[in-house]
Length: 302
Image (cartoon, rainbow, N blue to C red; front, side):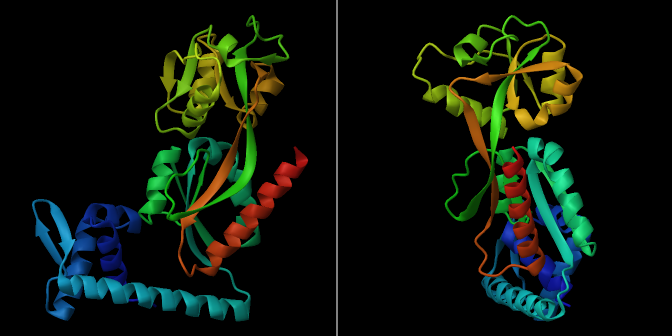
């Protein structure tokens, strides 16, 4: 029901980029430009200043952006009020998740949610934790699920569940028979790590910095971009690593890898992160409530 031209303009104004707006709206850049020009023709004034490959809102653009935000908030309130009466939950929600969560936690959660609410369309974007937080900050996604601390105080951050990280070793490794292993012992061997910006990498670095043994320094033999790549390298005997215990259940059952607890233990929270909107679509509220219940149920089984 909302004016498509106004939606497109509001996205461009928020991101200050026609390219990013086109990506967010799943449109081509010429189509985005056309919608904005139509709105400028409607108001008979420029809404953006375009100079040196940068855009900024004009005075008129600032006014339109302000009122557009109010219009969309009222529209969302109207939608939610009607759906509260009818009990209807439908719409589109875009979720972003770090690689570990997207591959090992979200498939079953989203599958169960979709079974309960078949009229909801879910879009999933996958990146490392740093990228997901950036998408939330820029309103590219409605909800992010990450595995490392979020420093932006303007975002809402809520713990979902706690995750245990363990040392992973190839079969027959000298440490594979140990009940527990310290990081100092682990780092006597080539260490395989995730890429910079990964939540797992950040949590491990923070953990090492908290250790009292000042001689402990992470010497990275290999840096890889996905949990599957890390597991494959460890299984091939190229080194050792530290990963979420939830990501290696298949390999443990098959006997491809060995998991050993760390001492001191290394735990991290999985976090929901979203904007501090005063008002959200009902489908977003339903997804958050469903995800909270799912995480609490999973934690209770562990």
